[in-house]
Length: 235
Ligand code: AMP
Image 1 (cartoon, rainbow, N blue to C red):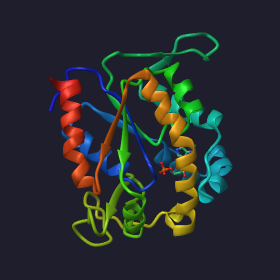
Image 2 (spheres, rainbow, N blue to C red):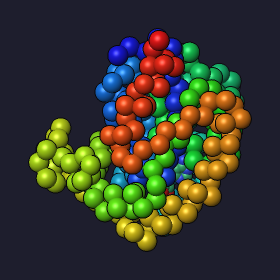
Image 3 (tube, rainbow, N blue to C red):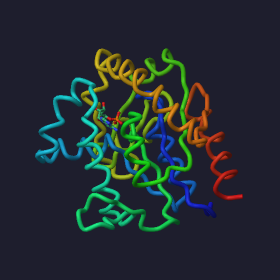
């Protein structure tokens, strides 16, 4: 389906709520969208043993938050690399949106109100989606989560199983568990999410772009999300 208006969207949700799944489905439904997942970008750096990757590895393993400055640099580099923003000032400090028609989805970034404020200065977000699923339901789900690391595709043995168990649908490569999907680390991440998401949600509510969607499963949330996208960006 074609978007008629530029969609600059962020997905906000507790870890394990299905942000990755919804991103994938949105990209399939609206081929003009591209997505950036901050977690995938970071995991890529860790895997490649880049200086940034080495710096953030222990924080990620412990379920902590990577410092805002590092995150901002990582995301604005990626937006620049994709040609969505450019440095419009010789100092390189002032970034400008390259095309008002670029439509994209940010998954996992911004995570804090401070990050959101700094992102606003670069890219005006026009929809912040808050994905809501009860804690007990997510805890159950985390146990069944498998990922295809090279692509970031996420599966769940209960809700979204791969066609062949343990194998990626597209490449057939093996799926792995994320090191930070242990229950203990999960609890730390949930706590961190609760602390930081309140001000983040308030930030976007104040801007008038916050939209909440509730559901017990990804399948329940997806049609609501599609409808809202169509209402805002297609009709
Ligand atoms: P995710 O795959 O989005 O759950 O991210 C995995 C880990 O990467 C998180 O637990 C954080 O340690 C780190 N991370 C991802 N995005 C951010 C962000 N926007 N700010 C700080 N840390 C982040």
